[in-house]
Length: 60
Length: 252
Length: 221
Image (cartoon, rainbow over all chains, first blue to last red; front, side):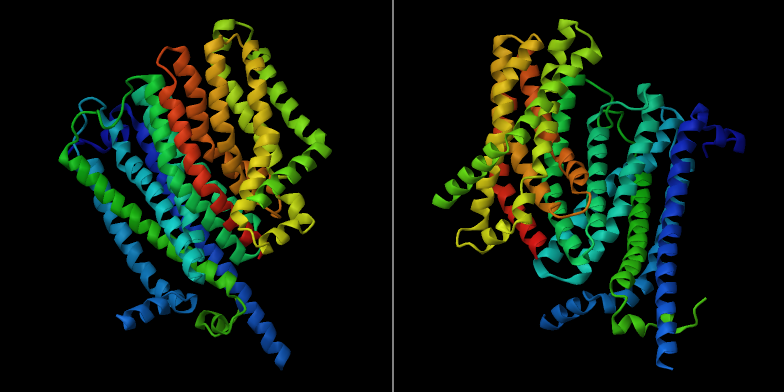
């Protein structure tokens, strides 16, 4: 084990800004990307569902 | 043999790939999370402190996988694009289009982490190191591909034009890399480079490989998600899309 | 072969009729190169050092100016479709158009470069290498640029998009072209750079017309 205490872990031997700056941005973007893709998917699904509903109303 | 070929073409159609991709996505997410946890654990708790670079070197565990993936994804993207051009299949172009943003993200991450790593190691946020410079140009190539596809309204034409650009890019990437490398050695002399750094410990290599696997699984999962959205957008007015169970339900 | 020469002559004739376009690119080149000393300062040691890079970057930008109009007028008046239908392979005709583009934009840059080099206090040997490197490099720029021009043909925002696509691909030409002069000045000899530039040119002569043709066919579909 490298770290004696959580504080030491977060300090990263004085490199906290650099280490957390890169891991943090990486994590944020890799969480953000799937959320945006899912949004794209649900918005196209919503449009398609509406179109279908409109078609059903048309035929009635 | 023939039977297999038929199977491949069956899954090559958007209609049968759409549900297949839907089934695969959770598995790739699970793999990405598992590899990610193991990789992070190795990179923070198993890998020892580097005697020269202190704790700062731990950035390597995301920097190198991101850089690998950015190059690898470009090749995969160009392969799909080339397949689409050669076989004229609909799915190939959609795959290439789905890979591009994730590839650009990886290229950006490798630049970002490279710059942040450079500050404590080289004393500057940006150095014109051969790897950083070629990563920057690779990022531009991704942006060019995305911009070209976005500018062309007709999806089939966008696929084909993008395919040619991707293939031209794939021929150029090694040329760019070696020219930048040569330029760099001519101008900077000896700079700090990873290959010349103290021999890499086995645990470091393992951590990097497992993190690379995590990034790989992540890329596949996100690409499959995006390709499903692209399939729906492009095939919106086909019978099979109208008969999908997701669409049969009530609008929310 | 006859039709290739005919295409080159036709494009040159058209360029002569619209002299302003050719001259604009040329003056753009001169102005951009002349702006650098104003921004950096008149110190001749520094200017000598940056001269190859400045001249090369300006040459890249100047060739970009004419690229957007490489195929666009022919596309607009239907000539391009005639070319696709003609018995001569499209690749040859495209090669002819690229040659004409180089003669109207690349060659003037090569001829003007020594004059601009003198402004930057380059000696005679360095000027010779600069001209030689540009002679090998500017056709490369026209060839790679043609691919981008064909890809962005009839696309909205084509001009800006064209530079986004093409400039990253120009990087090796820039490195070896400017590097040739620099390594000559520093006494290393320019042979290596020039032969690599020639190798890239050979590669591009082989592949670029083919890729351009494919892109044009897609644009015309």
